[in-house]
Each structure stands twice: as C-alpha cells, then as structure tokens.
Amino acid sequence: MTESVPAAPLLTVNDLSMAFPIRRGVFKRTVGQLRAVDGVDLTITEGETLGLVGESGCGKTTLGRCIVRSYRPTSGRMQYRTAAGSSVEVAELSGEPLRDYQREVRLIFQDPFSSLNPRMTLRDLVGEPLRTHKIATGSELDDRVAEMLRKVGLRPDYLRRYPHAFSGGERQRVNIARALILQPRLVIADEAVSALDVSVRAQILNLLRDLQEEFRLTYLFISHDLSVVEYLCDRTAVMYLGRIVEQGPTRELFRAPRHPYTEALLGSVPRPDPDLRGQGRRKHLAEDLPDPGHPPSGCRFHTRCPYRRPQRCADESPELGATPGDRTVACHFADQLELTGIAPHHPEEEVPVP
Ligand SMILES: Nc1ncnc2c1ncn2[C@@H]1O[C@H](COP(=O)(O)OP(=O)(O)OP(=O)(O)O)[C@@H](O)[C@H]1O
Ligand SMILES: [Mg+2]
Image: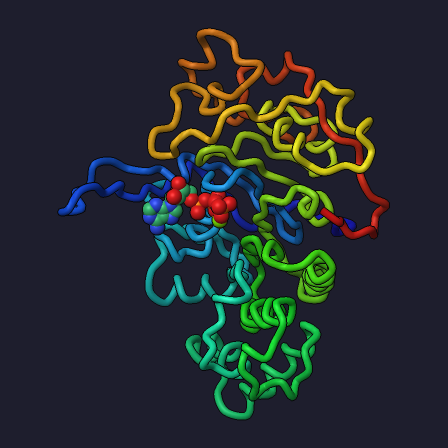
C-alpha cells in the first residue's frame, strides 16, 4: 500500500455500460443483450492501487477492456486526466488521440502461458509497443528493452531468447515489461498473479509494488483473490452482475463491509484463526450467480441476500450512494444492517499465503 495517496482523480467512470449480443440458432440471430457492464460508477485516484473484486462472470475483465478501450463502451462516460493536464472523454476517442491515450493506459494480461507469441523473441515481444507507437527502432529499441528487462528482474542478455525458455513467473515479468515499456500512467492488471504458484505470486506482487513506486503508477488491480487485494490495494471496489455495489478504503471495507454481498465474499477469505471469521455469524452465498443475461429485478443481489426485505429489494434498484468515510454502497438498508467483516490479517509487509 502506498503511504500517501494524492487525491486527484485520474479516471472517473460514470454510468458505463457494455452490452454483448446474445446469439442463438443456426443463423446466429440476436435474441437479446448481455449487459456485462451495466451502469458502473468508479473513480481511480492518481497514485493509488484500486482493487476490483467479484465472482467470475460479474464483468471485471469487460470493465477493464472498456477502460483500456479495447472495447468501445455501449454508453456512459470516462473522463481521463492526461499527463499534459487536460481532460479527455475516453469513450469518444478515436484515431491519434485514442493512440495517445493507449500509450498512457496499459493492460497486463492474465495468463503468462498463452499471452506471449512463442515465435517472438523477448526483444520483439517487449519492444513491439515501441514499434507500433513509432517511438524507437534498431539499437535504441534494443537499449530500451534491455533496460526494461532489468527493471522487471530479467537479465538484459535474454533479449534474443524465446518465451518457451522461461518459467511462469518469468513470463509474467515479460508481460509486465511489455505493459510498462511505453511508460504508462495507469496500468490495468487483470488477474495478473492468479495463474502463478504461491511463492512466485509473492515475488510478482512485490515487483508490482516496487515498479509502482519507481514509475509513479496507478493500478486497477482485478482479482477474485481477496487476500491478494487486501495485501496490495489502497481501495477496493466490489462488483456484482455488472454493477459496483460497494467501494471504499480496503482496510475499512474488509473490517466493516456495508453491502451484504461484500460480507458474503469476505466469508470465503481463508483465515487461520476461526475466531476471526465472525463468531459463526458468517453468511455464505447460497445459490449460484444468476444468469448475467437475465439479471434479477430490483437489487440484483436480492435473490441471494440473507437480509432482503419485501417488496422493495425485489422492485427497486438501489443507487450507489455516498456514506461516511469515503465509502459508497448500493443497498436500500445499508445503514440498518450490522455486517461482519474480517480482522486485519497480516503485519504490514507479510505476503499472503492463500
Ligand atoms: N466478447 C464477449 N461476447 C459475449 N459475452 C461476453 C464477452 N465477454 C464477456 N462476456 C460475458 O460477459 C459477462 C462478464 O464477463 P467478464 O469476462 O467481464 O467477467 P469477469 O468478472 O472478468 O469473470 P472472471 O472472473 O471469470 O474473469 C460474462 O457473462 C461473459 O460470459
Ligand atoms: Mg476476467
């Protein structure tokens, strides 16, 4: 966690939606829309690490891809403050301004095994963004790639090698080098350590922290591993079926959740001492995640919520509203519930062992 976080928003997302067509039958006719992201509000502050958590299929990757603009969102706004200090509307960008934006906002891919082309050397893999953005070629490109390899803990003389020669952790370092070679300001890490062994995971998390300090990076860290988010993230946003249901400083959100879904997610975090798990009051998620193509009416969580009340929860969709302590929550009864969180787990520098 960074020591002091400047308060300026780097990216402000408002009412963002991304719908995919649902196709059926031999002729692949469109029979409906799956709103993978459905009215998301989110603020990413300069210099922070914001965690984005939620069950598989809730829309985390889709949101990340809208932010890096590999998807053009269906509707909504994303205000980004550029290095030059001007404000741009990201959802509308195209051509040269879009390329400029995509230099500053980069994605680290999830899977260290499938995301690297086996026929490209490390020089070409890491140097590719320099070439496509026409920043460097030839020996200058070599120098910059070698320098970047050093920064991510790989030997510069690996330049001519192919990715198959490397372990999972080393490949993820290559992915990180690729993401950082253009000196971005905002980095979206989508399950960047999920595929790695526990010991390697800790090394990569520490590398991400070191690089954040060195390059003054802002991270959106997408993960369904709450232990990792607890360790790394200053603030956390909780996503459920395309919406943000709660957002706030990680420590407080974990200690005292205000949305029943956050409470339920925290119930799955491993803790060595069962006494820390809420004195047996913990609520578990009973049913499976509903079909994202046909989300429940009203509050989307009401079908699984142990605190739901008739009829309001089934009828009325709660807004994401501000509550004290820099926290937002979307629950009709947030101020009446006493929810159970989890006690802080680790001394400051300990790395999580899931
Ligand atoms: N290109 C696409 N076309 C159609 N549907 C899609 C597409 N990408 C994602 N979806 C659907 O959108 C929903 C959200 O998917 P997404 O990959 O964003 O979830 P996620 O939170 O990243 O899940 P995971 O934790 O498994 O990575 C899912 O129901 C998924 O099937
Ligand atoms: Mg995903």
